[in-house]
Amino acid sequence: MREYTIAAIPGDGIGPEVVDAGLEVFRTLTKKVGGFQLKVETLPWGSHYYKKYGVRMPQNGLEVLRPFSAIYFGAVGAPDVPDHITLWGLRLAISPGLRPIRESSPHAHSARPHDCKPGAVDWAIVWAPASVQTISRAPATEAAADPHHFAVKQLSDYPHEGFLLVHREADGSPELHETKVEVFFVQSGSATLVVGGTLLNEETVAPYEKRNGAIHGGARQKLSAGVVVRIPARAPHQLVLDGDHEFTYLVVKVQGYCFSQSSSIAVGM
Image 1: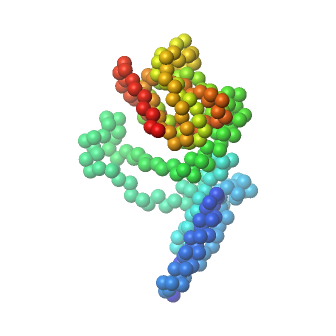
Image 2: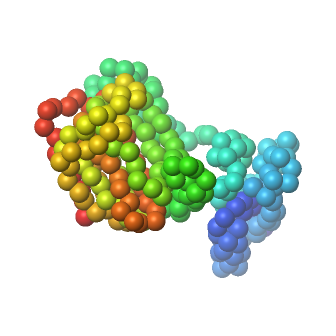
Image 3: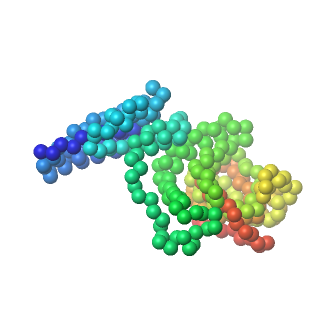
């Protein structure tokens, strides 16, 4: 009878629960199908291991894993452990990296922007709802201690777009981005978006970036969880809590926009 050895790494969060359920399925398969058996060894690597020993896995971790037929990995990550430690200390450390990476279209060369070279690799990245919820805990904690009651968690930053998770417990400042379009995905709480009109007495805080002052003649739109907003370049905007206690939203900033003198604002309800 064939025997397969499995290194189970439940990890953190929901990982142990998922791995336990999965192993139960594997055991049932061995009984129903027959002809093979599984030998499972559980390894306690993850955030608790890191907090105790200062590393995500032992120095000889890869050698420990090498004899196994497969690795059954759960989940890893904790709000009080930096993401880069989680990623490089365990998740990528045990990934074989053998998946093929290819261009999405055989005609991609003809449509490639001038600053992208043949063979360059871009990533398709998915943040699951549970991941966003976990990530949002850190900004909420930081905002409570911030004098402006505001905190930002950068999810990623690319040459032409950036992804931020923002938590507010007070009004934001008026702002205007001359070459960026912003898209808000409201996660929780509620706020009023003041958008459009004219930004008066503003300050240039960075190239093509203006803040502070006041918005004259802007429209007001109530935002709540589930709402998606697209704000075009050169549109003054400000978030006002209007007595609400908190507001958490994902922001996608798209750079490099050419703008016209007229702008429009779209709110998906």
